[in-house]
Length: 249
Ligand SMILES: NC(=O)c1ccc[n+]([C@@H]2O[C@H](COP(=O)([O-])OP(=O)(O)OC[C@H]3O[C@@H](n4cnc5c(N)ncnc54)[C@H](O)[C@@H]3O)[C@@H](O)[C@H]2O)c1
Image 1: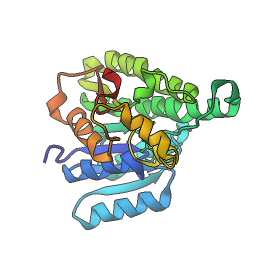
Image 2: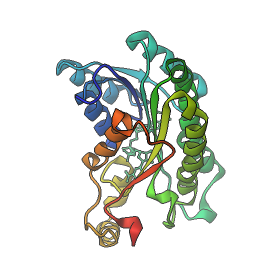
Image 3: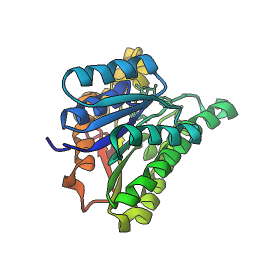
Image 4: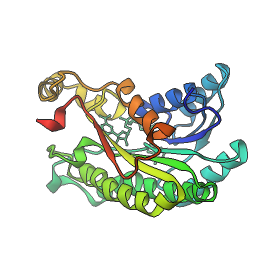
């Protein structure tokens, strides 16, 4: 087990790719805190982990609220004593041509995808600095590095995650806290499911992927475990693209 005796927080860990991170990290021996809005699903996953001998808790958290992020971190520390790993995975998506993107869409996207990641990290980093050890993993997207019609506002949020990752990494490097980012390609989960209902969309996206298939949640887990474990102890401020080769062509 690569994460025995560690404590991990996974934001948005109740569904989609986040659920795969939650269960995968638990299987590696860490206690997992599921910080999500989806209470029903989050509690179910936490119960399943506990039934199979692991440690988990659900904390209802709206990451876009700094006070929620801080309360979640305090609950995690009360329950498990510390936090070693933070996976900033919670995210939302709205698609619209940029001329039709509303102020409300823009503000909501930035509130969850950037502000949420920022203040969850701030709250967790204070604890990690005290311990002089920790891992922060920021989930960006290939939308940060390439143009996809309808994704201007979403892509802007995922782009913002890249300099945020670099500055966190620099400011925390002296405290033995590593901060890295993962850029998933299109993955067959909640966020992409609506678009996948259109077979033509799926055909076109798949045709552009050299590996000729969409990502599956299990495809992302290895990258998270690498950045969460001691295997990445000398690696910080880096990005890992997991997209079946989409961005290389
Ligand atoms: N699915 C993809 O194709 C894809 C591609 C690249 C990057 N990503 C990124 O991966 C992450 C997960 O995507 P997914 O497809 O699994 O999404 P999803 O919609 O399936 O799951 C997102 C989770 O985040 C939670 N969440 C939403 N708003 C929240 C908030 N304010 N506070 C706390 N939790 C909140 C939801 O309840 C849900 O459990 C996102 O950051 C997304 O941008 C996804």
